[in-house]
Image 1 (tube, protein in one colour):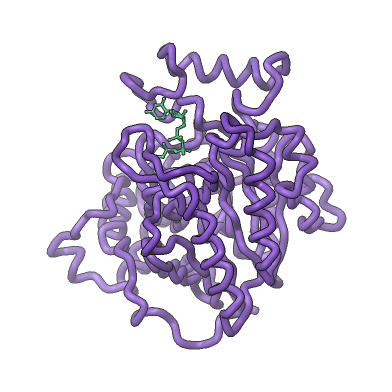
Image 2 (tube, helix red, strand yellow; image 1 turned 60 degrees about the vertical axis):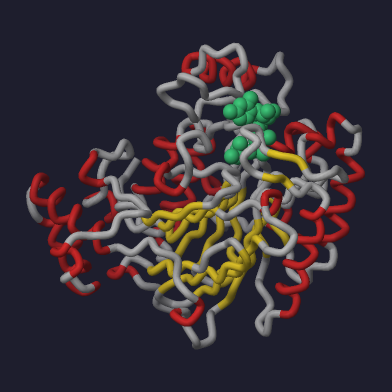
Length: 406
Ligand SMILES: Nc1ccn([C@@H]2O[C@H](COP(=O)(O)OP(=O)(O)OC[C@H](O)CO)[C@@H](O)[C@H]2O)c(=O)n1
């Protein structure tokens, strides 16, 4: 794999302590005196000096990067190039309210459809229509399978989506596989691969049918990539298949529990059955697409059900081989943000390579008097997530030396 500019100053995927930073970090007296220009200067300097000095300087820079949600008043007021919607974990079922596994969060199974309807009404009312909506997975809840209502519930949610004036791109999550097999999903309306774009003369950027992933260009020089975080999984695949056997082996190597959904006692608690991973084949394809995007000076948005960056998630809800995905992403300079769902609590962190990891709060755990969705407005030098309800607004600046030039 050839490494892009970003890799020259990015740490290895397994983050050493000086590179870790928290959403809750308040900064030091020294960092408080640094402004954005100084921080950018130090990042460039960091690329040029020796390894220990580089680590020290980057440590200071990371302290001044601001992970706090932004109030709406700080948002941009000029016209964006384009915008897109994001929504996660709708998990609809025609059931009374319930709770998550720990019984710490209420789940509003029936109301989730009304939340979706409200989001669609707001997207349709926007003065500039979003170019598309990214549905980040877990559209219908696994309980539907037990009540034999999987197809009926899916029908309700898909007919609600028909009110949306923009196209929707569906990502697949664990609850898709509780309800349907991978083969079923591939032949269903949840397969939106027909919306993909092909890159002429670059067959290496065409995804294989062995996983559900694709890319598309909603606006010149901006590429969106949908990833399949259950490419390696024991969910939704025939037990006789090679992938099932390989996935079960990987899972059991890290999880000796009888209940494979339980992270109890694990040193790597993300090795649970309700997570999954990326095959090497999918990661090679991702690398090819990002290589093309780098050369073509594009900005890239990646969407996945499962997060890949620990600081933007909890310790459990991470892709099995999130380090491998980060290694690919960090070897390119084009990726602006990685948008995911799955945790329901949301999260955000800008990683040491300037990639914004945004974890969208789940609709299913959103009270009827609130909301959970967002619109991302894309500008030449940044993207702004305008969150609604419990989704915070975020400013996602591009790396300073590689702003978009139309
Ligand atoms: N500690 C746990 C957690 C869960 N389970 C079982 O695993 C299955 C999936 O859990 P569920 O919470 O339904 O999955 P979601 O995708 O809705 O949410 C993901 C995160 O949990 C959100 O924080 C289910 O069968 C649980 O009973 C478990 O055994 N042990």
